[in-house]
Length: 181
Length: 307
Picture (cartoon, rainbow over the protein chains, first blue to last red):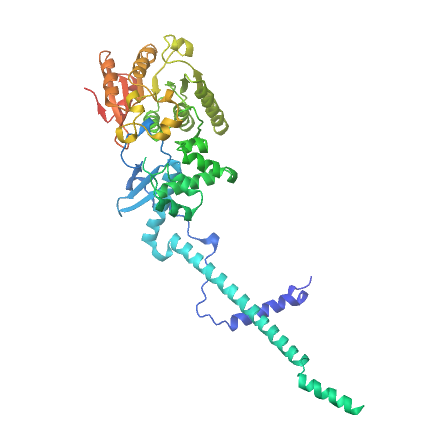
């Protein structure tokens, strides 16, 4: 078997390239982007049913029953020890709203308890870092493209300089030729 | 019905060209946005415009989307049959939690005016699918459209939960017929449930502000499932509860007088009668049970009990 280093020159080149990039990197802080599968888990254990107060809000006072056919169902959760309040009405189904409200509540409690290390904080960090790296890559790409374009333009200008002749010079040349004859 | 302001229409147009259609039936922009989102997530794109126009005409969203969540179930809705209400869902869940906490097995439950079949199906899901109580539940309705739809709902339930579906059945029968029980072919009944029509004719034509009903209900939902006063409760008791020797009942209602009337009929027969309010603190159910029967557990549901 051949060693991969010996097989592909391209591989070695890319390694060297990487190293050189690393050596001459200008960025000072070099924090890794949190991996998608290594995010903190959803903090479901923070939800204790006995600490919650649940209310179903059906939009104001009115007759209700057969007289009205409402399609929304709002769930309001209060976490009694901390006083946090969460509302959810994204779905038509009360059951899924109840589940979703508990998810939101657990994330909020996590945020309150763990600060920077909470799931939402890490997820947001990942989001902003992904965005930054994306824009960085885009900037790099367009920088190269811009440079290439500039070079091209300059080259074209030079070519034009070579080709173009002053009409006066041309006339003189013509005169010289006529004189020779 | 107040006119929608041009300012609101302009604001809605900025969000989506379909959104202004949802403003007439909704009180706020936020609610309109939510409805549009549900339409867009549940219907294919080529039906959005038609759905928006139908909603503009005050048609209930449940008929447009053809379904209404009811507890853990999704009930199919069609024009001609009353849409299940959240109040009904609420008392159904309360009732089934009382019955399953006490572990009452092999109950026979009969539901009158079952409409879409939402009450029997949800009770069956909670009691038989989740708590394994092996109750037998039968629903019946006078309307052929309702009977057809309840069987359709049962069919979709069977697909989801085949193990418990055989405990429910639906029939077509008239509550006011004197031979009701023999028509239904039921002998022992423990519990009678019902959501009969309970809107008096005088309130049926009023607007919501005057204690009437909403335009969308009046124009699109069947009056057969809405208009009624005391006659349904009287028929439920004389044709169903007493001859079937049931030990308990729970009926949805909308007025204090209806509950008082039920109490008047039952107190001479030594029944206990109580009331259940919904979470909007409107009077919603009248509940009755016999002393020294397993159904006396229904007393736990009551927020008020007649002396």
